Image (tube, rainbow, N blue to C red; front, side, top):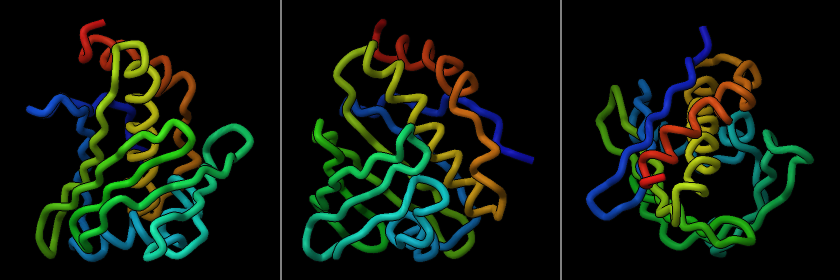
Length: 164
C-alpha cells in the first residue's frame, strides 16, 4: 500500500524545516539509499560524477522534463551526514541519518526563506522522501502523485509553519 501524503516538516531550533522519515534499514543501508546512484534513481533520480570531486549532476526524474541539476557536495561524513548545495538557486540541504542496525531516521533539513516558498518546497520534499520510503520498501514510487496530493494538498501546512 503506497504511503499516504502527510506534511511531516517541522521547524528546528535553528529555524530550518526538518523532514524526517523512519526506515527499516541500517545506517549503512540508508546511506547507500541516499548516495548510491542506483538507489537514488527510483526515488529522486540518477546522478553522474565523482562524489569525492565535490560536484555531481543529478537528473530530477520526477520533475517535468527531468532536468539535470548541479549538486555541490559541501560536507560528506559517511554514513551519517551529507550537506549539499542544489541547483541554480544554491539551496543548502542537510541529510542526517540516525539509528542502529534495525531502523533509522533519515532527516532532510533546509532553511526556507518565507511562507510562499515553503508552500512549494515543503510538499516537494515530502513527495521525494515518500518516494524514498516507497523505493526502499520495494514498491513503485511512481504510484505517488505530486499533484494534487502533495501540492496543493500539503501547501497550507508549510505556509502556516513559516507564518503565512
